[in-house]
Length: 492
Picture 1 (cartoon, rainbow, N blue to C red):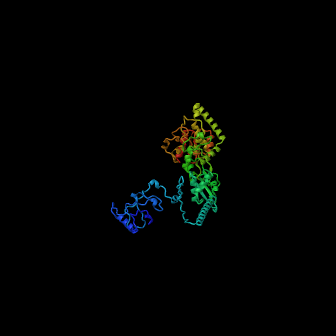
Picture 2 (cartoon, rainbow, N blue to C red):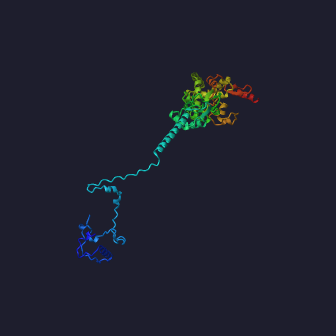
Picture 3 (cartoon, helix red, strand yellow):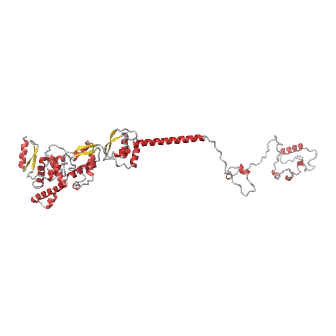
């Protein structure tokens, strides 16, 4: 402190002036009102910065000078004129955090400041030990592998039918059933476990359309391949039913019999008969679009059908049999029969145009045979009934109407005694009011009736009536003879 005031003038600091006096004077100066000067050395110049020991920077101007006396004035109160606060930096200057390491490493002599280092991330403490994670991974992988293996084994058991019994059962595929319907049906019977897997197998093996409607006998131990192969039309395990079609049955009666034997429903057969395409040489003579269009061509015989069979396949079986039974010889005989009819019409005075219009087609021949089938009491009289029909057809002026009761019964749909009112109904099958042949066959004739139609007896009969005493028909040449016979029947 003595060095600080070595340069003071003698008139300001004398030998008796002590440090305590200096401090007291300064205290007095601080407490004095502005403008007052009490220091005895107020005129003395303050020491310059260069004269102060260890000075690093020049002192601030006199007006802004704030003396620093350390802890000398501790306890005297705070200084009333604090230093102004440093203004806060602009928001743009605060975008990046202050990096103390960067500030310490900053080189003032470098041309450019080095980029700040990326703050180091703190390492998190591992919550689960590594060996526990490894164990969990191994356990999860093991569980997944076991689950997949079990699922694969279950699927393999279902596809290959492992461990199943050899008991048999009967299943039915209905018309219109899809692969999904079949799979659900097999699951309901306990044949398979997973319908989705069976459908996937059928898609993969293109078996979607190979399974046919029908009733089949299968075994529980059939694998998927055996199931598909044993549910097709030609499968030996398919349930069959034998049906006998008798001569003279109508299509409606045959369809009802098929439904009764679980072959097809009557409705399915009617629809197929009206709509199916016929690939036969005689198809052109059969009119299309009606439910009874195949009347006369469902050849009577004994057939083996599948249960729940396809309706078109059933009808094709009838038609194929007719095609086989109506031989080339029969077709040639139809030509011979037409020549005889043409000769008789020509002899009766009809021209070629009329004769051509009345030439018999195969459809016409079967129509005649169907009437013979319904009217004959036995094979022995079939050719005589055929002769009555042809005699009337060849004499249209004298006998325009065939007057056959069986055609009228077919028209009304009831097999009962006819009344006079019945004989007046308007129907193309009423041979009492419509000339010539009826609209079509009225039954499905057998081979004997077709033969009788092809080979009629040459007679002069134009009438016949049932003889109740014999059960056969009595044939007459004239109307008088016919009425006389009917008189004898009335008395019985």
